[in-house]
Length: 252
Length: 353
Image (cartoon, rainbow over all chains, first blue to last red; front, top):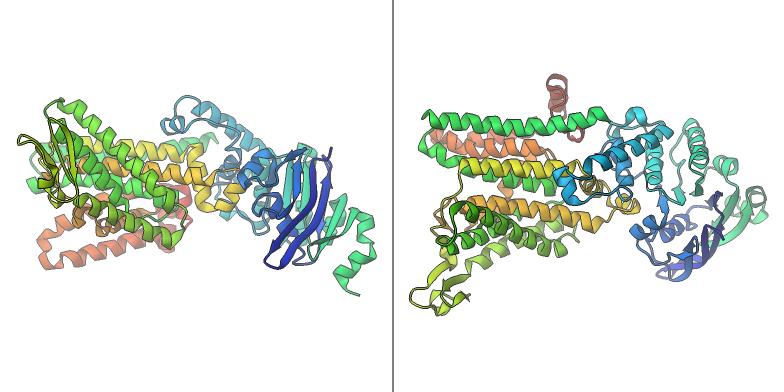
């Protein structure tokens, strides 16, 4: 059984069919790329997968469980975490606290225990600290843990966003243009980070990307979207040499 | 992490310390007879304004939602607790009655925080401010129309006038419309006020350093990302709003048990009063709990202390407001403070400006 199974997904905004008959199947452990020209509907697919938009038709299954019309929160709890095209961190909170927000739903104590700092508070907070530090270490952010998230350099902000997503312990990680706005060095480092996430957490990843070097460098399979429809799907090499794909990207 | 935990704890302890020291100083002045009776009369109001400033800072600074109707919650706390105290004045001894009055005032303010929160928290920014402003006024005006009396048959209620209540001759009129509640027992004292302030600080500061507090701040910073991280945005907004309303209610209990005639007048519960508390919060530093307490105390006492200057009083007051604003928010001053005063403020606050 595929980890993520998407069948016949459609959504229209007014008369525009933003995503039409979209199918996708991702096996556990795969690194899957979603590419396409600007406005092809890539981010819309992400928003459908994470419950920001509700599809008009179609079905989304995570490990066989139907999550089609669930809310963003429920989908996160079901096991899909994401990052955003324009980085969305909790800017006025420390790096550590950003990750601890990600841990919020996994390490629990009651509000009363939190206000009184009694009961499970100390124990659970210690566990959270340990877990957060472990994550920060993996992403090489442990030295910056007390800095405000907004004061991190751009590349590290991306890393922190991925670390926060990983803190929710997802089954599937969605990365929306992680290399956007990065210089070649930062992109290189990002590729290492993604490889690291796969290695350390045995994570299944679906990513949207424009940077072809990154896509061809790390993705195993690709889906190409154009005008909301799937143009081509399959192994990276085959897809990138497909004449239809080249036409969509370069014109005739 | 150990270091930061200590830092946060230390930060909280400094706040409690400041309050306790201020309490000791004022008590000492009072005991040695260095405080005029006029000044003594200002001490209790100073504490409840500090309490409601802390409450509002939870809403504006930590949750990030602008409310300019917080005096409405104070009003509810004041009237429900005063009503309770009046009714049970003979039947209950002072201490348990006053504690119960707090429980009731806080509970009703929290209840209204919940009810008002349902529609209000769906809005953002300016709209939220306008609607909270309206709710504050509605609460005040509705209470102004209440006539409630108690006799052997039970509680009588009317929206017209005292005659409509149809009470027995020995019945007691408790809430007399716009004349409010008269003769609530004077149980509030500076000591009680300080204890309530310390409790309010304890609740808010501990909340901020817990998982719920982090979730609330996450909602403030980016609710889209918070949702995608599995944070139930509605729940945490509501939680912060209710706790904030409840603390404002506690300030109301202090208020009503310190005043002879409690009326729902604009002077105490109108939007001007709400704006004044917002001024305390903004000038003390949004999100800086300790700053709110200090700003509330200084800005409450100042106009009274400046009475000697007669006509120049408000001029000096406004200059102080400007100076405080520069002190709290000007980037250059913040830089200077960082260099000279070290890490006295909340770590994230300094970087905001």
